[in-house]
Image (cartoon, rainbow, N blue to C red):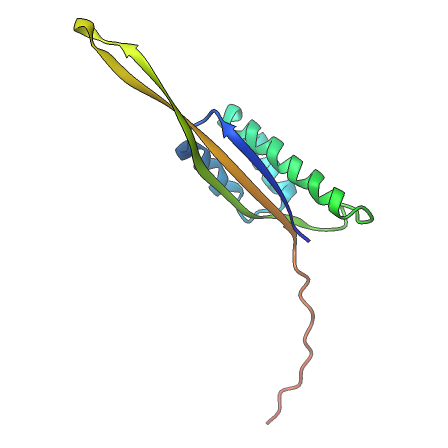
Length: 126
């Protein structure tokens, strides 16, 4: 069973957030949290770390009887979309104003349990 968490209007550019999202996509949840905890961009990784923990909490709400430790959760999908752009003016020489764009993003994380592979002991017929 999968669970989802959404972060809206994160005050970071989507291009930089996608770099972190690519590192944790498809990883197990414990490994993804470790990657984000020891990342070289801790300010960026903090948002994703918190979002993945929120998705795990949503999963535990859906599966009240199941234990997180027994089920192997992994990051099934993670999408980073552009949010609104705040436009500001920065002073420039000779009375001009340069436009400064402050971009935001929306992040969606879906976690799921690792599918169990059944041993298919099928005999090969000649």
